[in-house]
Image (cartoon, rainbow, N blue to C red; front, side):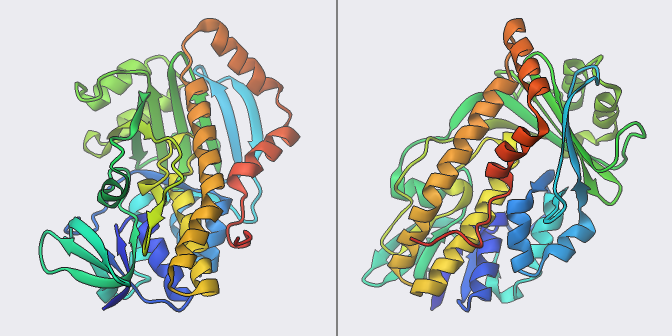
Length: 379
């Protein structure tokens, strides 16, 4: 019998398995994909998540694959500086290929702890056990069940049946260029604002540069991706065009910006939800994966305090609800402002960014990026 069954082998599920292992609890991960492929784009690992990786003794492995961000710059579409903020180096803010992070997490677990090709059909609680059925085989029995199966979570659907996530009106593209334009400042993350469009750039290690783009566009399906992006960002700051052209079209990811309203019901009985399964967040603050890692470490700490029991699950849910609700709201607001098209609204946005002193920017960013889930009070 499995002590803790984790449905989902993404960043949140794998981090949860590692955190539970460190805390002395056995878990197994059940992932629907037949293999953990090298797919995805860049992922930002801000100080709040680096603290967790350091606690799991994985920070050095991540740093070996990542690019360090020592400064954030906001510029206009012509490349003119609007504002800049330096970043603390303890712990550092980094970015890397999502596949590199997933590889580090997966290879830190015993091979027997990860079961691929397991698509959840349903689950149920029978007395003090959870029974999970998968499409490819016999049911498994576990003391507790954790749903970490992402934005379109099957575990959430059975628990809440609350419909699809909410589309926020803009498309997001992500890519990784194998080269870095010579004109880019090293160790710097850049966000570029235009009319209903944005472009982000940052180092992701091993000589590569990660980028993302967003635009108000109702139909992401009808897109010749690279051509579409070159048209959308024609005439922008030259590194923008260089990065799009240098990125193989087949590796550019296109997604809609989704999230969900906060929900106080994260679980029932001997199961709970984690990461995007319960609090999906628009990508504007780079906190989706970071929040999932926060969930993982807080859940493990609750297990340490209470044991593998329902009280641990309910305490974890109470601890994380307020934080994740706030970050999701901040991200939604930041994205909405970033996508403004009205000329007066864009002027106001630019003025507000330009006039924000670095000391105030640090205080605002610390709320999101410098949170320490390894020390949060468990109540």
